[in-house]
Image (cartoon, rainbow, N blue to C red; front, top):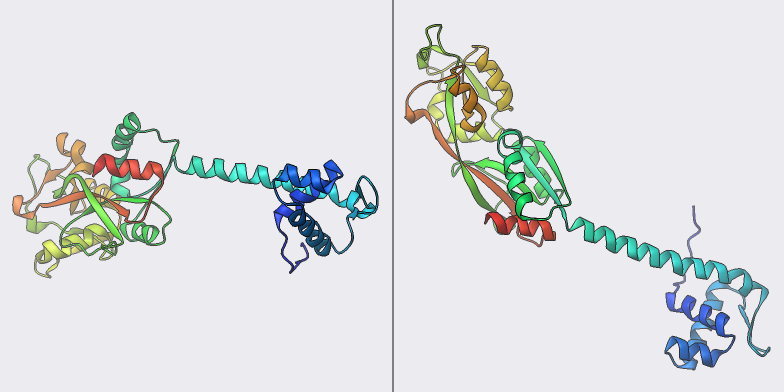
Length: 299
């Protein structure tokens, strides 16, 4: 572990020392450094005080390095070179980061919506890399609140409570989806009677669970449907519905193929269907160049 030195060190002192070591003359070194000679002399004196020993022999002509100065010079030169390399590396990293998109998406949209949307984005924008985190709605909100991602792709509804509120967050509507009550068809291909099916429910903290509680509270009444299974994941509820275990409200985007090939059928009438939005949330503070370009393309 490096020993802490409380006295500050100015990089100009190192650069001035390196110039004197090269020119062996204070006047020429000051001219090369574009500073007045008294200023350069003060810098060298301050550096010697920082090191704790004289670095230059001012009695000789031309000026020469003391043994301590000769020992110190390679370290001063290396330090300056390493700092320049570090600066260039930092700038390159920052430039690369402006081309990187950090995105969170809820499980369903990461499967159904995101791949095609990314193709469309890449056809219009230069995106070096994408880091996408697929998780629950609550976890994705936390990532946004902690500024760990730039944008959030999720479903939304007017009756759904969100932590991503103005003035810190805004959203654009990317498209529409709908929560459909679906179940495995009867052996003759018909839809089962709505009230005869157990409910495959979302957890109360899930995005779809909150929407359903706000829009269709009667579904959860004791004399309506009996909850048979609960999960935060729509994909798991879809698997349970395909297995004939009950009715689940699933995004249409997730069950298009199953509805087309009759592996799942609609249950009930249109009154039980819930239109929902596909939203892209962002912070209102400045984002990276790529994230801002993505936002402009959808807003």
